[in-house]
Image (cartoon, rainbow, N blue to C red; front, side):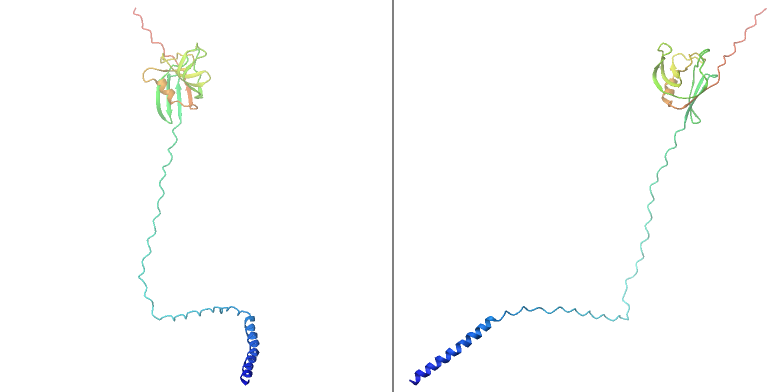
Length: 216
């Protein structure tokens, strides 16, 4: 009987302890989770101690002389522009029945001509070359051919012709020969529109030869 009481007493003691265990366990689970650990702020590293300057001079490399200055590259020489060609001009001398063409002061062409005959004389004066026609035909004289024509004063032309005596023979134009080295063509190809043409002088027929005296 005493044994039974002793066992019952242990059982009762155990029941008294169990609520306490349950309370402790509940308190443990009821505690909030621990806060995450925050790493401490990084501290600045102390600056390294500067070494004291040494009294000894550091060894220096031998000084190299600076490179010589580069010579400027000269710009290529531009040749000067060629001088303008000398101006062209023409002189027709009716007294000598001659045409002379100049470039500046240089004579480039000389030819005998036939100017206008009596009653159809070529007018004297200062003119300029007008239009050029390789084959012009006269509207005043039955559509007559006038090859290598250079106009200089209204209906007056310098042109080539088959008959060019060394005296006035035309209707007023200035005839140039077509034979030989063809001065009329050479003049036509050389002439420029706008060049000065000077017509000077007057034809004076040569005096007649003296008459032979008749023998008595």
